[in-house]
Image: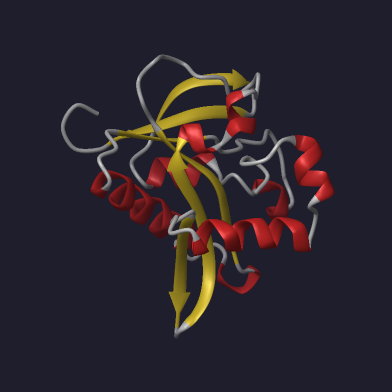
Length: 158
């Protein structure tokens, strides 16, 4: 819910409030993201939707729009600790591309981190540039030294 709510709303809703807001989205028929499973248990999450679904992203200076083309955005990736470095992020990104394309998207965009040194895994909650590259994304712009904006063309016109 970080990208879907203002900073103040997100802070006020920390914990139960944000979980309830996500539940309301799903109950209303929205698909706010995708889950990855291993052996029947969820091991990963990828938030994906049209960029307009993320008002906070629209106000992010470093991640500002690079053109006026309509895009879908991947704004969050999470993989359970015991499943990291096993390709789950790449699989989620590939699934996000298929999901967005099935809903008419022509471009999928992501905002990963590309740290200059070691970084604790939890700080890479928007994904890593390496995972995006492995899933067929290309750097389209760079708002800061460590934050590329990556895109993947989907179908025709992407």
